[in-house]
Length: 286
Image 1 (cartoon, rainbow, N blue to C red):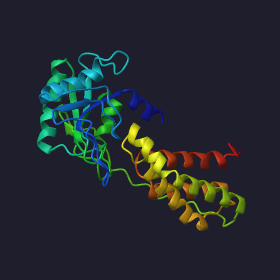
Image 2 (cartoon, rainbow, N blue to C red):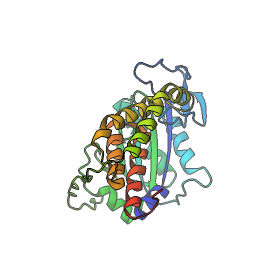
Image 3 (cartoon, rainbow, N blue to C red):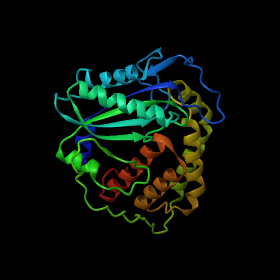
Image 4 (cartoon, rainbow, N blue to C red):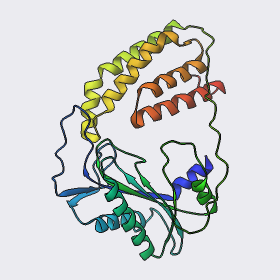
């Protein structure tokens, strides 16, 4: 956890999009004309910092890097520092355009007196058909560089480009952890089951309202996502050991993981598994 927090504190990001994402079956958004870009648009379509006329790729790249490095209190990087760069495809940007942004990013950072030594280019955090790109910059030390260079079995992790000329600090390929399966004791608690039933039905019924709210604040998928999760939990409920709190929380997390996409699903799964751990330790047994 400490290493993750240190890495997060060493990263700054900014993106630019020409179009927001469009959910399949939903009315396409018209918030940007064909000659506008939005600086800082969120991956769920959240409003960015501002819109402006479309400019050349070098200028767009400079705008993103300036937002990361020149904003007081954001990412502090000293001249001469080694940095890693992620040029991320937000969904519908062509390979040629991505490489143009990557070239512009390297040139801009070197002009600032920085040393870009590692680079990743590709679709790492996408938003359906959003036409745009984001840039993330990480200040590197020996431990972070070694972490980037380490082999990984993650199928979506693309080629890491070593721009330094020095060999990678490579180690052995990590083994994939065995899947953790939590089996309940089969005990049932009808009161708990009825509460879960009532809660999931109420959540599913709120789908239109949640969708409408999320169309204003984001990409409009919150209601659909919550409804899918609620229906999955309701379908899986007969298999839960509702009388075994630890197993029940993990079973709920499994249902959420299998049915809910996006940020909501990931955060709910993490919360449920954390709750299971606290329950097992005797904490938070409300």
